[in-house]
Length: 262
View (cartoon, rainbow, N blue to C red):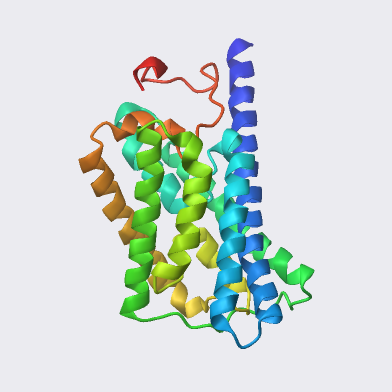
């Protein structure tokens, strides 16, 4: 009976975490796409002002969403963050398992698509149109590599140095800044990239541009993992605290590394 009860608890805990990742990613894309549509309508012909409006809303929205959903799931909202969490934590038994990375990624991607369509519905944009905005070229792919590497490195550096309390404003500020200093305007997220395909607006990306962007994001994540392993050799001990520490119940998921050593 006890074993059945613990299994039910694990299933319930994971269901909560997946819901948080799905809803959180959906709302993130709603913020990105919705503010992009609003910027395009409020500031027609002024791309610089549109980008300022879009990046400001994203910075603030992402900060709030991390604070809201972080205690439940860690607020990854990003498959490369979840994958990096698994890679860095698997040797010491912390962070997500490979199975959880897959389920997180599915929830994040489904949420991203739903979030784009929600923004479309709010602004009466047809939901059956895919983006026609081509985003290609080696310079844009380099921008995505830089944006993703910086994001992943920041997240794990904060976790390892016990500054997870700063993750929400720091990650939000980084993405807001990366809108401006990267040539790609910092998608830095495969799920968000897929979601933005479903927005034929200022914030969209054409389907043909997606593989290149996702490939660049993966490369950027690999670079970041190598960097944090070099700078913080014991980074795996903090994988449970990414992006911010989520509720962890020892009776549900056994730990191989005592909490006191982290």
